[in-house]
Length: 369
Image (cartoon, rainbow, N blue to C red; front, side, top):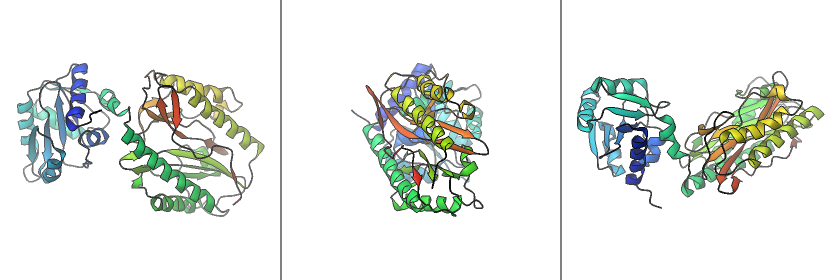
């Protein structure tokens, strides 16, 4: 299957046509990177790629980026500008060249000052939020995308094994976090995908906890580690919860409930299923348990160039998942003041079901420390 710059631009032209707008615009971020196959920074300098429904694309490019932009193979009009002169004239020239009246933009990514610059150049321009439709093109992963994600996941799992092997009673959460971060880069990660969550004891009941420097892990603690890495532009995202020295009967029961919810979400997964149905399958297990008051999160989210992207695995989201979608299956139960359990897999949707890209054991694990 062909995957050239022209092909990718044509796909966005089709989005514009389907939305009945004259063009769509991309700014540096995951969609921009996917399109031009080069990572440009988002900073104070506006950088915009406009793809019309009909006709050639145009780009507004900071002059200092022209050398890198030349590597893209872009054959549309380029309007560059220098810091000393400002960008208003470049916006004016680009909008005159394009002669469009309506534009779909990435509502979650485009910054307000870029929106204002477009409107200043053409006050009658209608701008709509086309985030969902633009980003939907990233939902179906290519074989190369999946290979990069698998590499990131494999690195994560090796780093997690090294971290669990090193845990000792009396370490702080920060101590454990430092081992995790060192292990991630030792195993070959390009970067962290997000700030890791390393939480023990009562801190594990906070879904987005920060590692503490003043808490030393104790016998009986739940230890929850949620982290991801980047490799070749793609992310992993994995969570495992273990127990230190021993696990109470309550801890075992909670863990078993979360594991059954995780498996129920997997069982519901196949191409054409809705995000609602997967979440409903997993959450129904949690709701049927004695711990239903500990539910605090949805089941998961899409994963790819961003840690959180479409589709969002939650009740009420009736978006269907095509084959090639990757999402996180991460049900959890959390009781503030006591402990929490989350189990997270990265899941590839296939025509006849699913494939879990994560392989790290989900059996209840008690570390001897």
